[in-house]
Image 1 (cartoon, one colour):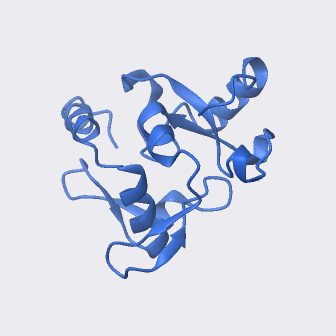
Image 2 (cartoon, one colour):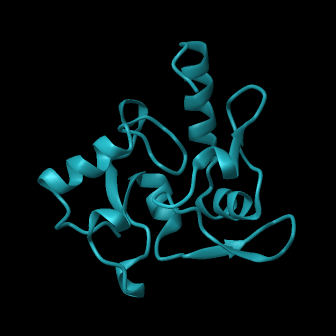
Length: 139
């Protein structure tokens, strides 16, 4: 659940730092069908703070699937990995685009566990990516 106190300048700083894209699925805010939030990387219920170092720009879908999770099982290795952290991890070190640029492919245990847990290839996202590719605005 997003923190309703994260508004104004702090929220704008989180969004601007992310280039107005979800830091998990990479969807641009202008193409999202759900509101974006300043999401707690380390959930408040697990001791996370509402400071800029612990906040990520997330679409409603990624935020909802992440919830209070901090780790997940890699569907390939069946090992638990911490979830992708936009403040300390580089997206392209853990994820890649499929050949047609419509699917996020986890290329590490962290990437696969995060992709699976956050449902980074939800049908609606795949459809939006397909349209963005056709429009020349993705990736």
